[in-house]
Length: 509
Image 1 (cartoon, helix red, strand yellow):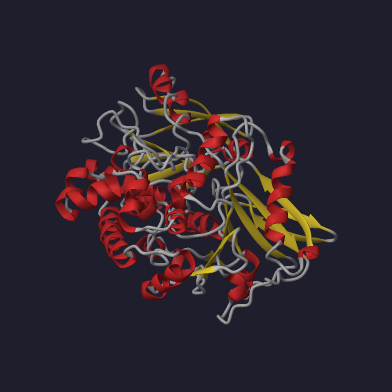
Image 2 (cartoon, rainbow, N blue to C red; image 1 turned 60 degrees about the horizontal axis):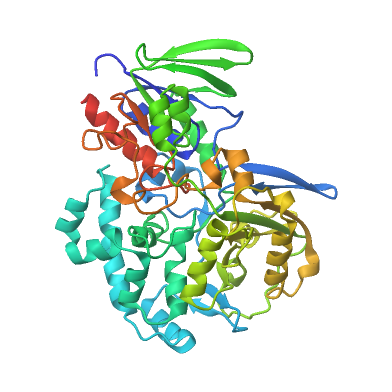
């Protein structure tokens, strides 16, 4: 490029930061406009005062898992951050048992465990082998910034695997490999990670390999020393050194797509910046409003944005002591899962209740992230231990302070597994409505849209001409979208931002 093309990115979350990083290094002049005073989007923190001490905690995202290792390396994040992924088997509790089922990384050990504990008589080996093939295919597509294609999936994976793992329903996928309801519940829980997708809906199978497709920990999840927000903090510093301009605490007044200019207000002063390419790394609906595109705005209203996930951060004055003994190293840092449903039908009913009934909460499962224990492994010693509870299923519409009974139920359930519940000195609770108000998640959905039929894999975009540009927004030919609503989905991964940058660069070359 003889003259640097100008790119304006709206949104300083992980995808905006990743897109900016790659495009700047590819020779573009990049500016980021961010509404808040800090970058990070939902990867940020809050400081809490307890007694006369303070502690920082993850306000939104907590764990790292779906990021690609090449992104972690190429951006320079690997040079500045320390991470830890627990090797301890995940521990799964159902209400009819006082002891856990251990989810070993070794599939042979896991196969024996679920046979003994859950009466599984299916084919775990085939499930893992086929999943690895699908994950390999997904990761290769990420690396090359390829538009997700069913035709290519059929060519590489074959029609059988494509229909099972990408096109199909979670129910058909799980029935194909497993016999035990408990195995199916555990293996298929990610289909309702962000919303209330029914296991009978087409496309929901894809969520299962997608959630294991991160390569930074080779399909597993872990922690960042100091807190996950260090990712976006460090990336912002890296991007500043690259010469990327940041306009923080800025409110966009209008976008003139014909003149290719963005008007915004910062510190009560008006600014105008021109662009050759505009990228929205925001929620999916905001761009249509800023572009004053009423027709597109109406079309987007028909998408399923409903979120049903909540989060509690619990602070303990002493390290949490678990009742169940484990001989493995760093057992306190193990991921734990507590299920309230015993059968797959109960699990399905619970996931749909908060959509189809007046129930504000339908107990289903709780993921437990031992953030404090992980920080201790990373030699980051804080004044309080932290446990994070990721909760399903909470109805959208009310904030956490309007639904205190949910927190009480969750805490009472988790305390059954802890020796020292009296050491819990404070909590922070967020419902989908809170997530909507804090992070602008449409209807509180952490992935901005449900990972559902017509919103997953090759249909997870907002382009009127996906063949021309999968990450294009609407009918525009120089305006792109790479927020969490685009393929692959959210998480602190930056994959959509990376793929958008790759595809944009190709249009210029």
